[in-house]
Image (cartoon, rainbow, N blue to C red; front, side):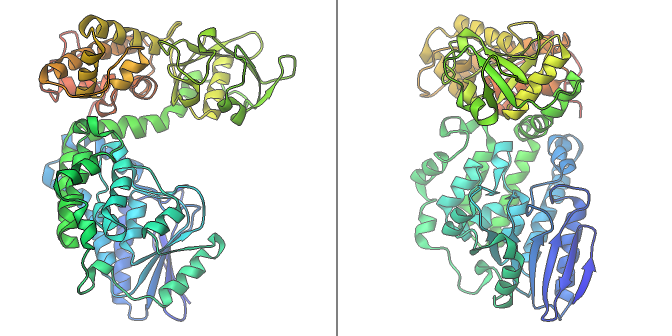
Length: 561
């Protein structure tokens, strides 16, 4: 057996010429795509093509997961590249992985991806560029293309290979919904070719590679997509079917350019050969990178949200012991979410914290009228901090934490983390920053939009339905909008955003990221905007036709580039 080592992978070749390329990026918990990783993949391809001793290649992971998406520095570039580079330069940067995977797909020997768990974004695109895919058995959804949730599309051939491996319908569900699927669902759809015992995954992949033919099915002479598959994408009905699968909902898809770009890739690319389809994907990806929505969503929905627990811990500045045993007061029944995550004890027992629900939150299965009075107190000893929850407790995604006592605030943070709620620490006095922003939303809407129908039109125009509902406003079913409705909505968003800016200037939020995360994930401020302070930066740059930046808006952007 021989071995070749690169920076991020190792190639071991057995005596039969079957190679295992083991991806194991040093110093990282997950394998991701970075410039170095793409260099190594290109070197692997060159080695495969130049070594006549190689008969087949298995691509596997040396970590507990196969491969996630892009490296953090690459993801951060999604938010700023448009300000620093020309469209041609951006196209060259982001097409490099695409063309590298196409070269991998066309190597002369069979390739098998041994997928041991999580394969997201570029990781799944790598697996799809291999000729065969063998996935480890498991019940966890772990194979996915979540780019649409960040305002993007899979940019390394994912929109073209997925419908060819499965069907346009299955591909649309994955691409437009953004949710991962289980290995068994992937097998049923054709995304993977077989499942294997995780312990024997690489050995099974070796055997698959030993007896496999080289080449992707669409590169073989005479291959054609099934006619009934192509039919699904044709006509107005096809467009409606695709829109119905969008994670944003068909009614507001016009605000999320990635939805239309993915539909274009499916409709136009699937009907052509793979290379033409890949060029359509690249051409569809570029406008997303040049527009503001993807940058906003990548920053707030991924980078800022992911880093929120670390920012909260830094602001609290005190470490609390892990909270496991709690007493719960103020509700007749312990909420299932608490019962699942904590050991709930009686009021006289020894506990790590006592949680007292405000009487307005007595029904933990439904939000209360303004949905800002669901106040949860974390009270070790005689001190208290607040977990301010602006929606139904059972489904709340993000929580505002406030309290004068640092130990109590640290305990509240520990509770939020165990509940898997994204924490934002503020210095706002009761009822809190979230409450203040919803009060402004409600007052502005009631003044300008008297009827549920008028609110529905404005909500439809700018994806404001969740924000209105969190503010306790009645909204009729979405049924269309006009340019006037859009202008009203932009004025309302500007009013709310300026209130967030005042809170930020007063030190209530530690950073712009916290203000945006709280607004989007606790209050329902539209995701396309990135949050109120990202929205104000859009106004400052003139990126919202029909809206003007207020005279009192500060000159410096909240997110310098």
